[in-house]
Length: 250
Image 1 (cartoon, rainbow, N blue to C red):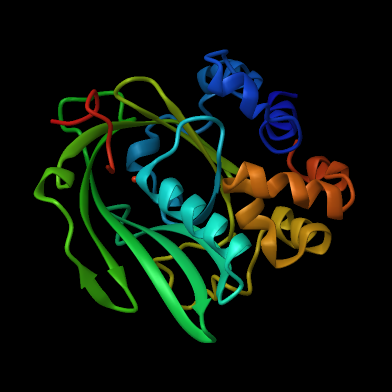
Image 2: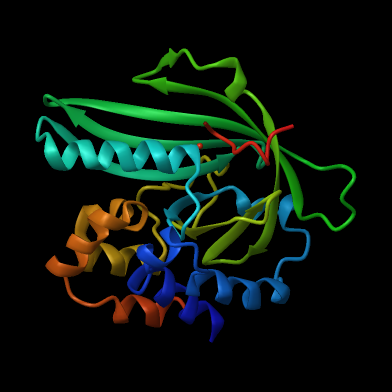
């Protein structure tokens, strides 16, 4: 089963040394086999994109992942900075994306948001391509100045989407894997996104605790997760942001 193999490769067996030395990761090889299945054909237009997602680092960092990893490393070496949680939300009819990092700094709750906008690529008849634009960064609700050069657009293909995961590829073909966090839509005001979790996250948190999202993004920190907790096998049984690189900018 490709999905089970992908989760195993991306979460348990991700080889960061292989990536840094230029080798193709096992996870990406499996993604290429999974993508042609396409259970949702016009994925860029599908309302199930509107959800809370968890990043899984598989080799190519986005701006959000870079910021998250930096904060995670700072937290590990500087106890007054307490990394709490990280996730991504698509909302407003899949037109907005918000990467959310929550932390405590000297006991004060803070939230860092990385914001981008999305729109379908009208030239794409297949309905899988979108155009993403970096919009800004806020910290505790305050806009943080960012270089004008960051406010560019890039093509993004939603190459795979289902009830458990999403694969998004940049114009250069680099894959980003995300796992669905909540079972309900972020556009459904009657749904409690924090309470109505998927079976994956219920089981994952029972094994990894509140650090599960951090473990999936910061692979160096993830090694300590593996040392401190048991295997992910029960989870696998349930699952059968510069913002853009030069090649992606428009």
